[in-house]
Image 1 (cartoon, rainbow, N blue to C red):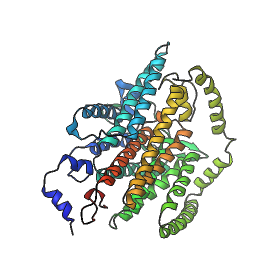
Image 2 (cartoon, one colour):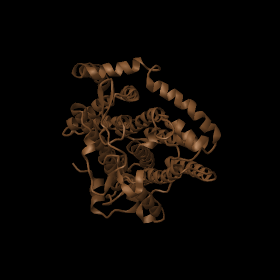
Image 3 (cartoon, rainbow, N blue to C red):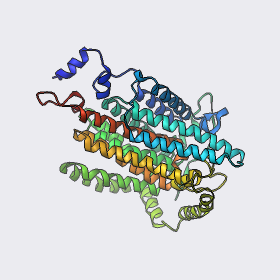
Image 4 (cartoon, helix red, strand yellow):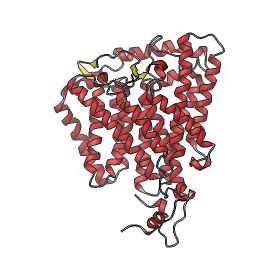
Length: 461
């Protein structure tokens, strides 16, 4: 039977206060719509395809993100567009990150730079504008919990499609993205065959590298699990199929950090579930690896071999030597760094650690800003979990927390901000954390109706 409060809201015109509480009718084009188009460009178009005249900053997703930044700034001056202007931890961390990058840009331009460093610094500003625009538009522009749910579902749909492409690549050994051509776009770098490790294909889908592919999937997996657990009976099987595809594709990158993330996710999620679901999940977690080993034994053997050689393999030696080579660069510009975007691994050396790369490019101030971004996201999701009035929302907040912890592993194992899909999704998830924090606080502030019934914004969906 329809709720009478909701029938009343359907009869009368929407009021501005409805959008603050999340009970009015949604606008036709809102922040979720705009960010969804950005995600489509980010995940569907191979990251190597760019507008030729713009170079590495010319991917359609990067151009769209810069446009969303301008739209966000314009909307801040137009109160009727509905952007939230109250206190927001994500916005505070964004200001700190922006200041650190601008400070490094000014400091870098005080000395002579090579042409590729100048271009890299300018490109860095464009990327930063896009990331912050997408993140802040998501954090301040989503006006209802149902619209946040829509955006999170679209994230999972996008990563499920990437996972399906990755599984096809693993079976066929073909780089499907190399066959994608779009009028007006050119390959920014040459297309190569899929990478291999221990004779196994390391899939990439539309990503630029196997690590990026596995990171994108691992960051989305907690959200997919949450959506499957709370799905209606009619679509529950489809949601668990999404979980299966994403989880199955992650090991296909044959990456140690991806496996660590895959193991960490159930450790963080399962203990928070009801007892009956915990027991069932333990059985599944015990059976799935065994079934996967029987189905594709070569993957399991390759993963065990990579962990057995941990500390002795070429990858470990490369990371250790990279940190040693990075030390002089860090000491040379300890506070502001040599400039965001000016460190080119193709010319210098590969670091495979975003925290170290941030020290090189933006110095101690930049590293603190990156850590502040993580701290703001964790604070937002944990606070939202405490303030939530339903178990579903609390579980959603915990899933976002887990996604951000997976991102921490990614930052420590490769240069996340150098890869468009991983970095773009990371900032969208930060924006979702800020939106959830704001919406749960607003819902908790709404007093119940006189007969004790929760206010419409608090009604479980």
